Length: 174
Image (cartoon, rainbow, N blue to C red):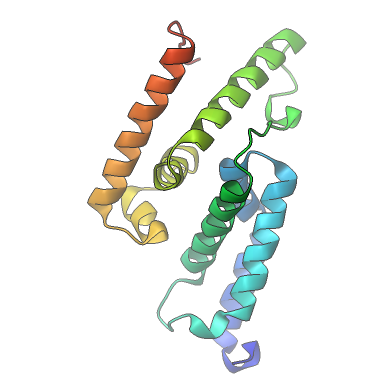
């Protein structure tokens, strides 16, 4: 069904598209690369606009689009299970160069470990800790129960901690 048959839903989708930067930030937390994040968001928005007629009338367009973005990112990660690097821009420009390089190295290591997690654990961890979403929202986005979301996050944190300590037993968070 064309978008013009759903004027309220069309307006809601436009507001989600207007908040594209937030979607790119969400995608970046999954793919750790600005270009890939933008590509995932573009693909998700295209898919959402093509499938708008599948959205239930009382459903949140924002949650629905975020779910599509997460799925696009997970698919992208599945298709390229290689280690990616973070943008140098992720470190604060005001820090001295040696500190910025150290932070970038830690971020690269951490992103590689996060990407090594099982897909569902990775998604739950990113949504909860990097995006700061509450457990009910994580559960809704992942289409799982809240208790499953809590378990996935707990297991992801523990697996991440073990991976980090196996590489560097003296790792401490700044």
